[in-house]
Length: 588
Image (tube, rainbow, N blue to C red; front, side, top):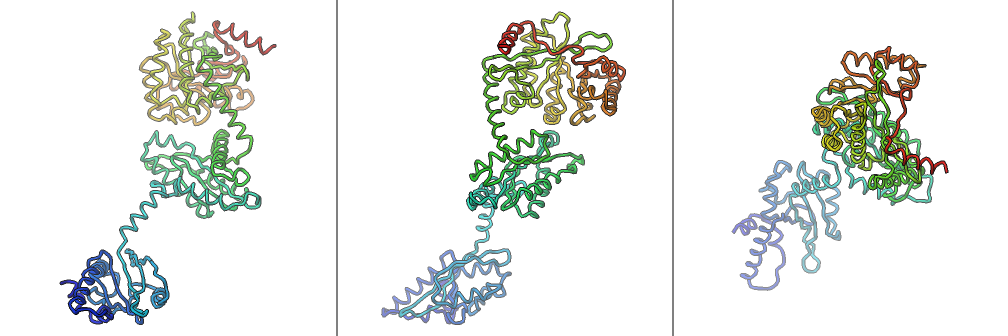
């Protein structure tokens, strides 16, 4: 048998020298044969070592097979292993030798790296009658594939696949560990967590595709990772374009400097694989422990509030949590509930109209629909307060639909047959629902599509990408006019004028009003008006309040104007009785 032949080849094998109990020779022989066969067939390698020299005195068939797999990693052939010192398995065998020579050492396990391979080793002591030390017995196996699989599972559980950074699960585990090790009463030692959210990343995905977006995220992760490694802090990607940083035992000044370096990393445009350059920014929200919380949920919530404040403050900046941010969030939540209730009951929501005139004839050719909201407890709530809440709360479709239906219904009754212009929120453009909402409003009112104009901002074009252009083209196909609102502010890219054939460009009123005392603003109005002439697009100057401003913009080449000089936003006759009631209540 194979087991018997292997045993017979191994002269000096400790089995042959072990004392045997008194029994028949045949029985003893059968026991040894069965034992050797069993040792050869078990799926792990077994080796016996001489207790004095630590030379190999026995090895089974599985050991031979393992050794053949790693023959290029050890300086001995499998057939020549008998009598070889076990040191051949160790680069630095001194520590292992001390363990193996100690007869009192309890069993232990270790993993040994041999080049790219990993061996799992278990060491125990074999003792005979009267405590006779037969030497160490090693059981071992090749576990490289198993370890690699374990490492892969660990990486999937703790690292982001795309960027290689720590993931949300690892971030939460680290945050909990950091907070658990802090003393809430010790104000001299504090840790900080930072939410980092990219500004302008959505446009990359929408314009160039998710593959390019992934390349951008990978590049951003490398840039942020370099900064954080130098600072010795923990960086993770939470998902999408959201990253998070944990800074232990740092002052507010040190955290502020780190936040500044992270923001400065976006100072230069990123070069996309297409060769185009894209300017991004980063908004950062910061919360400190223990000052802002000792529980992870509390700290996360307050860092998120600080991030929201950074976004609302103009983006590309860092904000530290302040208690008033929490108050502001509570107020916004209350405002959202009030707005939902107003939509649900159609209560005290109005549409006012401001005229747009043709500067040549002085005739009102259009009116802009402007939403107004009155609440019994808070009075008139400015659009700048409730429109962002509607967008964040997912109510913007209801808001746009309300204004569209009211504007089309009211315009259908105008005897001068002026058109009506409706502002559409940026988040509504590119979702595929806008053309349907416009078609329903036109059908319900009977207003011809040619008497409706939709006003969109450059932000809508940037955030909506190609889907936004498809929505606008669908409206154009119906006969609806398209205006580019607030041109001159924000991005003011000529590429947007090339991307779609707009009917009108609206020049922001701040340039018109400041043009009286600032030559640069006057030059901007003049340049935009001439651009409209060149492109054969009507230009509407907003915010015109004086005859001098009208004279100047008309001389510059503007074709239309809007502002208090021509009329303030006014309600429809249908809403006047209710507005009188509201005004009477406020007077009382």
